[in-house]
Image 1 (cartoon, rainbow over the protein chains, first blue to last red):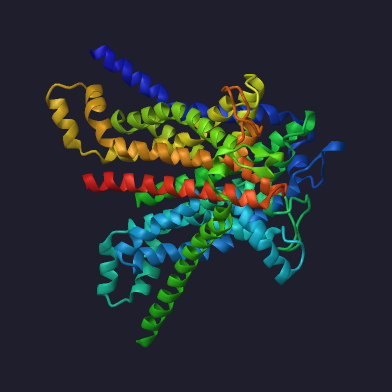
Image 2 (image 1 turned 120 degrees about the horizontal axis):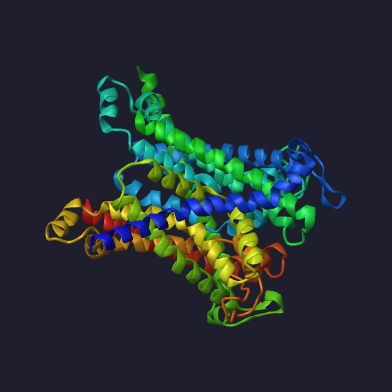
Amino acid sequence: MKSKENLIQFGLLLTALSTIAILLLIALFIFQEGLPIILKVGISGFICGSHWSPQQGQFGIFPMIIGTAWITVGALLVSLPLSMSCAIYLSEFSTAKVRAILKPIIELLAGIPSVVYGFIGMVILFPMVRNYFGGTGPCVLSASIILGIMILPTITSIALDSLRAVPYSFREGSLALGATRWQTIRMVVLPAAKSGILSGIILGVGRAVGETMAVIMIAGNSVIIPNSFLDPVRTLTANIALEMNYAIGDHRQALFATGIVLFITIMILNVVANTIARGGVKE
Amino acid sequence: MLKPIFWEQVMKKVLFIGTAITVFILFFIILYILKNGLPVVDLEFLLSSPKDFGRAGGIFPCIVGTIVLTLVAIVIATPLGVGTAIYLTEYTKKGRLISIIRFGTECLAGIPSIIFGLFGFVLFVVYLGLGWSILSGGLTMTFMILPTIIRTSEEAIKSVPNSYREVSLSLGGTKWQTIVNVVLPSALPGIVTGIILGVARSIEETAVVIFTAGSVLRIPTSLFDSCRTMSVHFYILAREGISMENAYGTAAILVITILLINMFAYWLMHRLMAKYS
C-alpha cells in the first residue's frame, strides 16, 4: 500500500514537471533552429541591422523591434485609461452586485478570438482612420487601438483583484481621518495595490508584444522604421507569421531567430511581472 | 473644503465613463458581428461543405476540424493538467521545486502563440515527421492550454474544505484514496471549468493551427490529415477577401460558441465557489 502511494506521488511529480519540460523543449528547439544565423550575422548585426531582405541575405530586425515597441506603447496609451477606470470604479465605487456582473463581462473581451479583433479593425477602424487622418488604414494607430482593447481584460482583471485584496481597514483608517473616497483611493488604496497593478500591466505588455493574427491584419506589415502613428509597421510576430510558409535555409533560421528575440523578451517580462507580484505579497 | 469633494465627484464620473466605454466596446463588437453574421447562418451553412474556396456553401469541414483538434488537445492536456494541479496542491510542502514548477506554468501561460506555432512546427511537423496534421496541431495546442487547466484545477482543489480530507484520512483512507474519492469529486465542477476554458482557447487559436495543422479545406478522415478550424477559415476568408458574407457568418458562429462556453464555465466555477465559501 505504502509503495503504491509513493509510486503515485512520483508519477504526479513527473506530471508536474511536464510544464518545465515543455518550456525547456520550446527554448531548445527555437534556439537550435535560430541561433546559427544570429552567430553568422552577429548579435548586433541581427538586432540593430535595419535591412531585412532575405533574398539578398540581409537579416536585420531593427525595424520590427521598433514597430513592436511603437504598437505596444500605443496599445498601453489606449488601454491604461480604460482598464484603470474599470478596475478602480468596480473596486471602489460600484456595488458588489454590479461588480459581480461587469467583471466577467469585461473578461469576456479576452475570449473573443484575435482574428475577430483584426477583422473589426479592418472593417471599422480602417475607414475611420482613412477619413480622419488619411492614409489607407493599416498603421500603428489602428493596431494600437485594437491591441489596446485586446489587453484591456488582462490589465483590468489583475488590477481589480489587487485593489480588492487591499484590506478594508486601510480604507476605514483613511476615511475616518476625514479623507474623501477619492483621496483614500489615490493615497492609500492605489499605493497599497501598486505591485499587483504593475504586474498586471506588464502581463498586458507581454500580450501586446506576443499578439500575432490581429496585428498582421491591421498593422500594414511594411518593414520600415515608423516616423508617425500613421505609418504601417511590421512587428516581430508578424515577421515570423508572414514569411514562415515559404522560408527556407538562412531565411527560415532568421525567422526562428526572430522567435528567439521574442521568446527572450517575453521571458524577461514574465520574470519581472512575477518578481513584482511576489514583492507585493511580502509587504 | 469643497475642493476634495468636488474632485471626488469628477473622478467618480470619469471612472464611470471609462467603464461604460469598455462595456460599450464589448457589446459593440459582439453585436456588430452577430448583426452582420447571423443572417448568413442557417442549418445549410453549418452542415454543407464550402464551394469555390469558401465563396459559397457552408463551413461543415471547419466545424469538424475544430472539434477534432480540440478533442485531441483536451484528451492529452486534462490528465497532465489535473495531475500537476493535484501535485501542487495536495503533495507540496513549500519548496524550491514547487516555486520552479509554478514559475514554469506562469511562463508557459505568457508565451505567445506564434512561439508555440514555431515550436510545434519544428518538433511535430518536421522533426517527428507528423506533417501538417490534426495530431501535430492537437499536441501543440495541448501545451498551450495546459496552464489554463492547471490554474483552474488548482483553484478548484484548493476550494475543497480541509475537513473533507480529514474525515477521509481519519477513516483510514490513504492520501491517494482521499484524493480520488473525496477531493476530486468535490472539485469536479472547477476542473471541468478549466477544461472548458481550454476548449475555448483552442477554438480561438489561429496562428498555431496554421503552423501545425495546416489549412486544408476537407473533412479529415484520420488524425494524420490536415484540417482547417473555424478561426483559420475565417482568417483566410477575411484576409484574402474571398467572401465577406461567409466571413461574417463564420465569425458569428465563433463568437456565439465562445460566449456560450465562457458563460457556462463562469457559471460552473461560481457555483463551486459559492458552495464552499
